[in-house]
Structures are given as structure tokens and as C-alpha cells.
Image (cartoon, rainbow, N blue to C red; front, side, top):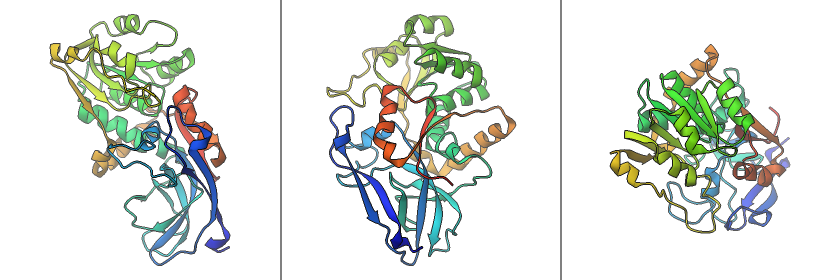
Length: 343
């Protein structure tokens, strides 16, 4: 079968969302796959990573990465298989990770800097793991905690969104570094998973109890490092419990992404002044040249059985719009992955 005989189904951005993305913000298209030119590869998408950051990429404004343009294929990292190649860089049958986009096939130069493809070993770990702890969420957690948070053994680390892709990795890395780790998650099932499966010392269910009381109970000596994935009221509450010289890592603010009013900033920011604390953002791309270090260490822990991950896999590219909303409705349990095709 030639490349031109293949049809590529894609989700393109049709409009900039106001509030929660809706069906009319997307255009589902199908187009033939052209034949390869010299130096190009054709990648069949297997799995796509669905991340809260995707909501920000849909907005037209200055950020750490340019916004997705109207009528452009929606940006998404993914794992795929090379099914045709006219480049010595990648051989047919090899598995790669890169910015594939929400589409069934990717075609272009093997050294395309935007896609930034790298080979992955499907025998070393199941492919969805490369979109979780061994991928961008894991690198965000690993370098955000260790480089920005700089935890010391014996300190108390708190992480919100603890059952999510970034949160579950943050907590386990902190435990490996000798910290007392407390998660914040919504619902008993998620909190039980965080404690019983991932090994956190405690998890506070913010949906069914007082977060303030939970922090007093499980962080009796205060909070030294807070890894924030949600922003809003949870950030405000944690700031009331921070210690002298605390470090707050701003990774995301999922509670604010679909606001139709201005983003709510921290009301208790003066706690940073009183406690001589530091609040700093993490953008994972800043550590790209060191990803291999994080992958090597966490893969070692996985092999030893001291590090676990959980993926929530939705099947079918046509499910993309509804699957993306799961992130903002708290419906996913673990790293949210869209399975586009079987390996």
C-alpha cells in the first residue's frame, strides 16, 4: 500500500474556546497521506498524551510556547511507529516519541525540530509509560521537584493533583529522596490509590473534608515544598501552612484554565514574604538536554518494583474532544492517554 492510499483523520482547532472547550471548537477532517520525499518519515500514531496544558495552547496569547493556530492540527505528544522511511535516521518498524498531533499519521522530515522525534524501546516499558513517568509529565515532575523544589530528606512535600500524571510521579520521587509526602486529591478512591499503591504517607480528600484540617493533621511541622498543579483555593490554603524558606513549584493551575473571568491569583501571597519563601514556575522544555537522566533513574526504580504508574486509556481518535474534557471534570484516574491504533 502506498502512502497516498492512506487516509489521515485529524482534529483541527476551529475556534478559540471561551470557557470549557465545546464540539464546535474542533473540526474533524480526513485527507490522503502524500508520498514521502527524500529525508522524510511516515509515522502511524499509536498513543497520544492528553494534558491540561493543551487548554492553554488553544488560547491566543503570549506563553512559553506559541498557540495552536486556527485550522492547525491540535498539538499533542505521542508515541507512534515508523511505517515508511526515506531517512537513515529512522528505520521502518522503529517506535518513536514526539509531537505527533491529534491525527492518525504524521509525515515530514525525520529531523523536524517541532516534532523532535526520539526512539523509544517498547521492550523496556509498555508504550503508554512513555507518555507518563518516562515522558513529559514525568520529566515535569522529576525536574520540577528536584531542581526547583530542591527537597531535603526529612522535609514535608505536599503535591496537589496527586493521582494525576505529574502528581503521582512527584510524590514517588520525593519518597525516594527521603521526604514525608502528602498528596491532595479528589475522592476516596484516588486517595486510597495514592497511599496504598504509590506509597505516599497521606492523602487529603479535598472533596469530602476540610483541606485546612487535613494539612494540620498530616503536616504537623508545616510544609517545606509544595508542588502545585491546580492553583485557586487549594494554593491559597497551602500557603497558610508553609515553613520558613519553603519552596512552591508552580506547574499548572487546572482549576483556572477554563475560567471566563480573569485567573484568580494567590490571595495569601504575603505568606511568601513572612516566611522568606520562594515561588517559581517549571516549564519542562528547559530541561530537555537532561531528560535522559530522569528517565534512567525512574526506569531503574520501575525495574526494581519501587515505582508505579497508572494510565487511564481511552480508545479511538474520534473520542478526543470528550476525552480531553475528562481532565477538567476530574473524571480521569491516572495519566490520560488516547489510544489511536493498536501496535
